[in-house]
Figure (cartoon, rainbow, N blue to C red):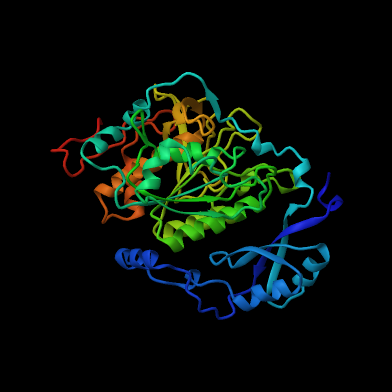
Length: 427
């Protein structure tokens, strides 16, 4: 079915300017971090013009969310209303991002290759692969670091025993939903976010997450029945929220390249980190001091073997998957980017990872770069606990620099850190 054959309902509206907006969109934690890191406040830190947003509503639109970094808004509107909005003097362009009948289409990206298996490997293998257990032994488990997890729904997050610790200790700081999705945030149909969060935040006698002393915000940007350009726009809104809350690290096991309608598909020639909105936002997030850990994707054996958006941004820490033998997983998406940069940047255990099944609360084995990514984000959190004065770029470079043969292998990822009495990684 072509784009012209259906009713358009969701749109991205690009504004011409910010209309002199003076609404600073940063909370106290974010402001403190900016001051500590010497990052100046600029126009990107101010909200979109509220008068513009109200004008969209007056034309009949429902405003889903806005983006101060890209100066626009995601709206729901009829074709007639969208046409009227396009004629407003402050609107630069308007682009359809989701159709009203998306739910009837099987979305290509939703057929995920992350799979669960009954065998239960030792969870310690995924920590020991890059010597994360040594950081844990000397007391670095992500203390003082705030992590934002952006994913699909978080099934049973409020009841799973593996999350008892973060709930009871006040480490779960808040939840946000940026998706127009009928599936409940904690519903059984949206398990992916809980599986990924467990790899960082899990804390149980039989299971330890990679950085379970950190604090967490969890956010949903995925819409389970569809795969449309609206989802990366939801993601942008979530990343901006992380910035406003003072998040240090974002772990996001999502990626975009193929959509419900071929007309929307991304192209390899534009996989340069500068073209697509989510990739541009990822680059801005790095400039604002956050470290973004993004999943490379699981499509190496498909017609799109490449990494996905926003992993093409040069400042993300793009994570591929290996097994406990350090060999690249057969499904792990590959680079380089269209402009010739090596991607993924690093690899972590995502082939035979030990995860918690959100339905049963039991340990299982699973495959996917989605599982490698939170492990790597946890490593970053523990390193940042050890070096709190360092910048996001310095932590990113520490992790990349300590890798070896990044194209095919992942080895230990550790340098001398306080309290190790001179211990250094295996060179």
